[in-house]
Length: 216
Image (cartoon, rainbow, N blue to C red; front, side, top):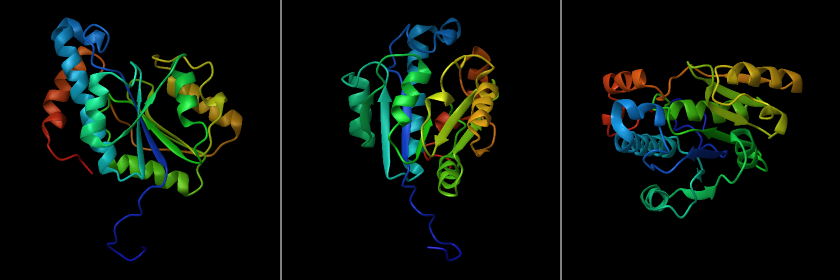
């Protein structure tokens, strides 16, 4: 519908969420000195749930939760029951390998992590809209030099190969690869994620986890 005030079209792209199970000592380890291993794991679980609420609020036709710790983990089964998402295994390999496999074969896919509570449902819809409008790729830059969202109209291994994952060079290296492919891409607003002790204070001040309804 194109009339003024009409509800936006339902994105027909698949929305992929990458997440790990909240196992103490294996997630958010940089936050353990501040929160303890158990506290860091609880925060991680909250972030995953927040991400899934935002994902569903964006209205995608299909949401897939790619699990890094095996789809049989009780946490993921609970997320499937609560949110109705489709569970998939990330499989082996580095982050780039796993992202490429998840996005491969889709005519359009948007992928996000689970540690960026500042992402909004509107950001996800904007990514889908950019792909529908003809962009080959769309990125949501993160303040730490990475990105919190990537959307691809078609997957290419070159986008992910040789990237220094976890470094401040991820976004710049990805831009260089898109240029090499001669792809057209769009960048959305810059967001922030929760990875370091100072991010926890920012998160608490933002009250993003305390909001019952996701920001649209």
